[in-house]
Image (cartoon, one colour):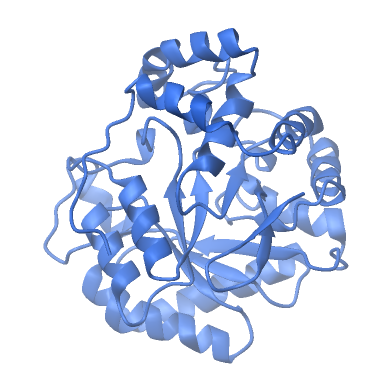
Length: 331
C-alpha cells in the first residue's frame, strides 16, 4: 500500500486500521474475526493501528495484543488515547501514565508510538451547548492543556513510554488551531475528513465546524493529519447497519444525493467516501472503522486503485453538502 509521511514523523500507510470497529462500536463482530482482520490489514500493507481503552472497554486493545502477541510486523506503529477531561492539575500525570501503562500491557508492546489526548480542548470559561453539566469529563481547559498536559506528555516521552503525542481535533475549531500553531504543538491531530464536514454526534458546540481549516493549519505547521469519520459513523455508507444517533440519521438522509452519484459512478459509497477523504488537502492517512475482513478488503481494494479522479472530487463537492465556513487567515 502507498505511504505518506505523517507530519514530521514517519511513513504511514494511506489507511490506518482503527479500533472502533474491532471494539464493536460500529456493529457486532467476534474476537476471532477481529483478530483475523488485524492480521489481514498487516498483510495488506497497513502499518498504523489506532486504539483507545474506551473502544469496547478495552476490547480493541486486546484484539491488537492477541493478533500480534508481542511480535508486531516490522514497521508497525500503534496509537492509543486517554480521555483526561479537566481534573485537578496534580492528578493529570498519574492519570496519563496509568492509562498508557495499562494500554502497553494489553497491546503487548513496549512503547506507544502516538498517545492522543482524547478530550476536547476549550477556553477556560467556555460553556458547551450540549452536556455542559459533564464537560469536565470530556473537555480539557486550555490552561490545563498548556501548563500541565503538554509537560506530562513530554515526561512520558522522556520515560520511553510514548514516542510522541497528539490531540483529537473535534473540539472548538479556533482552540484546536491555536494548539496547532503553538510553540509546543502536538505531532499529530485527528481531523474529521468527510465531504459533509460533519462530526455528527461528537460535536457538542454551537459554532460551525472547520475540519478543512484545521487540516490546513496542521499541514502548514508540520503537524500530521490522521483522518477520522470518513463515512461519518455509517451515514455515508449504502445503509446504516446498526443503531445510530439522531445526528447520524440526519446525515444519512442528507447524503441521499451522494448515494445517487455513487450509484451512477458504479462505486460503493463507503469506498468512495474513503477515497474522497484521502484526496482532501493535508490528510496523511485515514482511519478505517471496519469490523471484519470483507469490509477491510473492499476498502483496501478501492484505495489501491489510486487517487480519486479530481473530476469526481469536484462532482461530490458540487453537491454542496458540507457545512464549511472559511476562516481567514489560515496559517
